[in-house]
Image 1: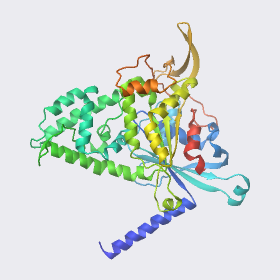
Image 2 (image 1 turned 45 degrees about the vertical axis):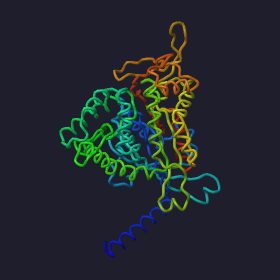
Image 3 (image 1 turned 120 degrees about the vertical axis):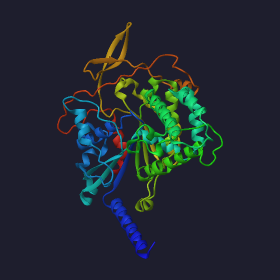
Image 4 (image 1 turned 90 degrees about the horizontal axis):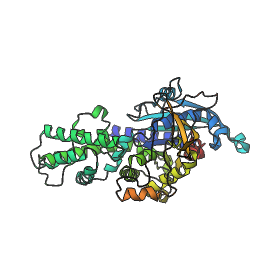
Length: 467
């Protein structure tokens, strides 16, 4: 490296620090990460959040709403990251024929800027200020891979193979893996056959409601489809001589972590200030005890990769980031009557207790909440076998209106979490129903965003202190 290269690197470093100081002191930037496993509703959450921050008529719990004199979208600062397609997603949700938008398939970003005029004497002296909110969206499938960062190939293989007998198409792959000679000389057709069978198992498990389906890029490979980095699979413990199948599988696993997982963590996770963890708790409950316990374990593994806590003002000036606030949000609260929302919140808090305690201990502020980023139902009482049930009514994709009583969630979360942890095959008392409601037709008044449940409380917790 020449002197000019070193000087150029030092110059760029000072320029970066200067930009960071300018942002911190004059136009602060809050980076909000939106995290969640597949079907948790990340795209809908971001779309509705942005719409309701632009038009704040439905945001009474956002304390600074009256101080915001303008909110507007700007190009995001990262030119190499695709823009979150807010306008198309909002049109899908609120257009003449509302429907759910396409799910997240790649990293995307959106910048929402606020011009704020504080009230009182301080506001008169200080004048208006600008705060930028950068929202980062990424596929839930990729999120799963963070748990691999501290696992060796041997550790990962042992854990995966142990649960295969209890997962869809797991026994088929297990039989294929056990008949494969890991010490044999490596050949590509064998690797491709094992990777294809393992991918079939992962897809079937995800469809059955299981959360821990790693590696996540196997489910959403994108431009990496067919690459050696995605052509590996777990094998039973054993010798791994040079040039063998097991040695090559291990090498590709480490390549996957080094070239795919670590850059994703470095380029996106390490820059997050605030975090939303969206969880489809109702879907996991409906899928059964095994799926619920799998969700608990998956979220604990994932959140261990976060760096919660608070960064001091000097560290912030120098670009150091820590996740200061984490919202654990159970989505689809509109699938329940409001009388059950507190129970859903309690179950969510208990489900994520381990991760929440770790974040609280490190200094981060956390909150568990049940919400619906887009309300799709209305509430009504229905009569069944002489009993009055608290139900919700919504529209199916076919256009038919139906009422749903999903079952009574227990007041004590342990009534669900204990049998799940003990390996129960099914719930003893009742089944919990879910229904895939479509977005309801809505006419938005001027100044109002889409209807929601507690999205304003979520926004207040996540960014209220910065506004």
